[in-house]
Length: 251
Image (cartoon, rainbow, N blue to C red; front, side, top):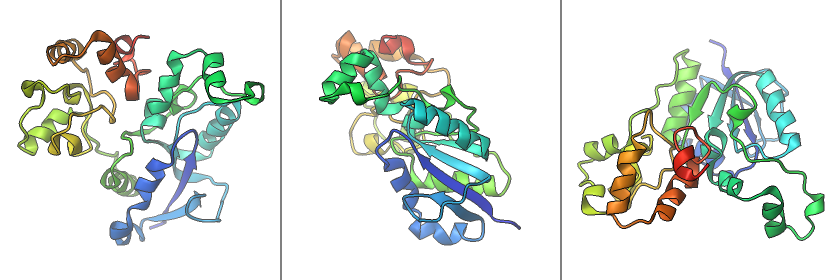
């Protein structure tokens, strides 16, 4: 069986998602017979130009040059995977969208005339995405499963249910019922409820679950003592540009 040819690309991001992908060391033997890396600047000087069977794209799109580049990546890739929140929803970068372009540039750069940035957008704003691998960063296990599924010809089987399901499986006491402002009911699972397992509320880093009941959660967050402004920031943090959270985030 021919090996699946992989490529990894980085746009506006912290590289954390690629680092998560690098943590496959203990599972590397599972993948050696399935894949071959054609392009991954973080890992190798080898830079084949494609075509690629699967391209993993990390980061949001924030410049005219990146718009051109992501379209070229799409052209050369059979399957395109949005890797992590910045690529899937705009991520933390998208918080900047609640400032004007000139305000953002003046706040960061001494000479904003040299900057040629655009609005922050997720990858699918410009090109078609085949697989959405959420998380800030996605878990290494999810990345490995996506690679194996695609290599074997199966559509990746990623959770669409909320974090609350993972909390139940871990037998956690519900933090919302204890008055802790947790985003778990409206956020997609996949992290293994890592924060609630440690007694900390879910912050929403896997983005919205399918058909989230945001109105009900907002009432619970108010009962927990959050102001409407604080609630808005909760929805804005990772996925405020999504259709599920736009209204709650103030767009």
